[in-house]
Image (cartoon, rainbow, N blue to C red; front, side, top):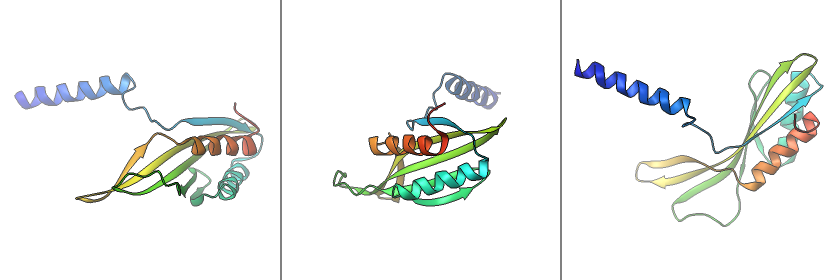
Length: 143
């Protein structure tokens, strides 16, 4: 009986937190519309990311493009192992067009007692600018 109440209370707290927007990302997204097919748009986003210095990790015509670029600035914390920008671009086919969403973010890997620990951080200005550049080049601007 007590266990059942605890589980119900936990589930209702999680539901309330999710409904109130408690799981928001600090990674902004930029959207646009392309008049090209999904395949052409995904290829364009991958090429644009490469041109901006990103290492393209995934090119999937259903999921989109995932790319990373190391931050080479000297602004690091003592225990920070590595910092890098992340571009996550997805497409959705629509009637006679393709919707583009590009999310920009920054991740840091910290050296802790348990090993290297990845941590999401607010997107750097450079990553935000790169997301806008990709949408403008492949989608003709924001939607």
